[in-house]
Image 1 (cartoon, rainbow, N blue to C red):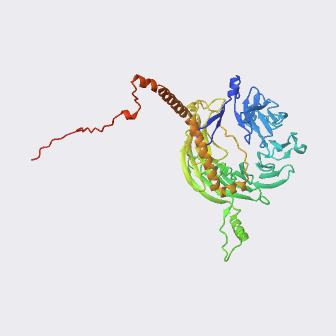
Image 2 (image 1 turned 30 degrees about the vertical axis):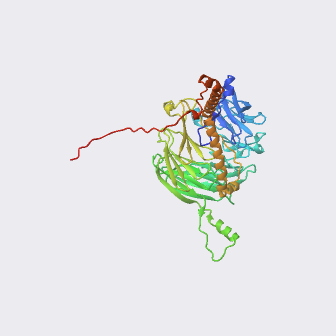
Length: 544
C-alpha cells in the first residue's frame, strides 16, 4: 500500500508507503484502505486486529479501533464517526460504530435486523444485508428493516423517539446528500399501489408521495446538491410479459415538490446526474443486452427566449428578462447514437462525461465527451473494470484490478491503472502483477457556488497568477532534475581552478629551467601567414 502525490502534470511520486512501519518490522496495511469524506483521515484495515487511522503531513498514527475480521469501513460525512463491518452473519456485533474523536465504541449491531431474513436458509443466503446510511450532518444513522426504517440519533445511538419509522413493504431508502430527508420506495403492498415517499427527519413529516402502478422495480438517484431526485421505474403491462421504463423526477427544493414523468420507450441501463448542475444523462437501447446503445442528455430547465420590449430597459427589467429565460420543464438536450458503452461517469466539475465500456466482455472503449462544446475524444483501456475521477475533475483514472480474496488472475498482465486528463490525453500508466485498489483522496469544497461563479468571471486574472505559479514550479523541478549535472559541473570548474593556481605557482621554476624563457608570453612568438594551396580534384577534357 502506497500513497502517491499527483499534480496532473508530472508522474505520481510516492508520498508515504509505510517506510516507518516497515523499518520497525510492522505491516501498516493487510487489506483494503479507505479515505475519509473530507480527506482528513486515511484508514488501513488489518483484519486480525481492526482499523488504524493515519493523518497529518507525515501520516502519523492517530487512532486504532478494535474490530476483528473487519471487511470494510464507512466514515460519516462530517468525519465524526467510523463504522466497521466484518460481514459475519453469526456475529451479534458484526457492525460497530465508533466515535473518531474519543475512540469509544458507541454501539454494535448484528449483520441483519431482527426478523429480516426468511425462515428458508437457502433463501436467506441469497439476501444481502441492508446497509446503514448516514445523514449529511452526522446527526442520524438509519437502516432498513421489515416494513420499517430504524433511525438512530448520534452520539447516543438510540432510536429516534424510541420507535422506528413505519414504511410498509419498503425495498430501498436513501438520505438526501444535503438535507435530513429520507426517500424510499415500496412496491404494491396490502392493496396499496407502489409509491415513492419523501420523509423529513426528525419530524417524520411526509413531504411528498408519488403513487406508481404496475411497478416491477425502482432505482433512486439523488443529485449531488440534493436539488433533484431521479427515480428510474421499471414497469410491466397487465400481462407482465413486457417491461418498459419511465423516469420520475422530483424538484425537491421547489414548493410542493413537483414531480415530472419522462417516458422512455427503450430499456434504461444507466442514469447519472451532472454534479453541481441540472442536467442528467441516461444510457438506453431497445434491447438491454445490445452492444450498441444511445446516450441522451436532458436538462431540468428549459431555455425560453425573453420577450423583446421596445425602449430602454432598466437594470431591474434586464434581470427579470434574464430570469424569465429559464422554465421549469424537462428538456431534451441531445442524443449520441450507437455508442459502445455500459457506464456513465460525470466529471465532478460537470460538463465532461466519460462513456465507458467496462467489464471482462467489454471492449474497454473510453469516450470523453464535452456536453457544452460537443467535442468527443475516443481512447481505450483494455479490460478496464473501474473509472475514478479525482475530486477536481481534471484527472480521471481507469483501472484493471482484482479482489484480494482471489480471482481475475488471468488478467494479471493487464493489472494496473492509467491516468488521463479530462480531455482524454494519457498522462501516466503503471502496471502491477497484483493490483487490488485505487482511491483518490477526497477534498473538502471550500468555495461556495457564488464564489466559484465569481472566479469564473475573473478567470483571466487568476490564470495569470496560476501561470506564474506553474512556471515557478517547473523551474524548481528543472533545478531538481539537473541537480546532479550542476554538481558535476561545479566540481569540474573547481578542479580546473585548482590546477590553474598550481600552474601559476610553478611559473618561476619553469622559467628558470627554460633559461628565462616564458612560454606564456605572447611577445616571444612570431606570427606568420602562410597560404597553402591544395588541389582537391582535377579533370582533363579533350576539346575538338
